[in-house]
Image (cartoon, rainbow, N blue to C red; front, side):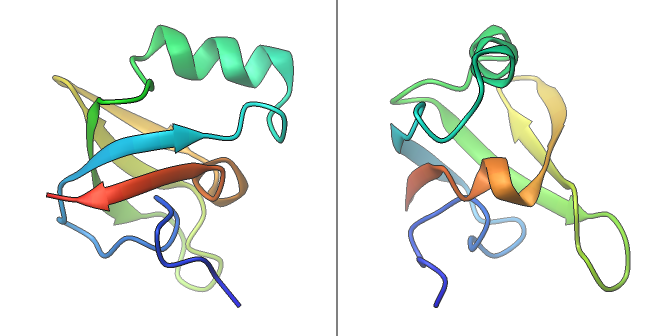
Length: 83
């Protein structure tokens, strides 16, 4: 069962605040990439659209003034609270 409090499970166009990131699930390179794009606790994020018809992977997310694509497995490691 999916955790409904993750970025991966958040409905499209729903702004949310990042409340936790499970850095242990992500590799070091992926963690550094996310941090460089502004993924940190307290940041506001909004899923915009899914790529692909069936897999819905990756997810395009707005963070700050950027749009960043993250894989669904990465988005599942990011806990959010809808605003």
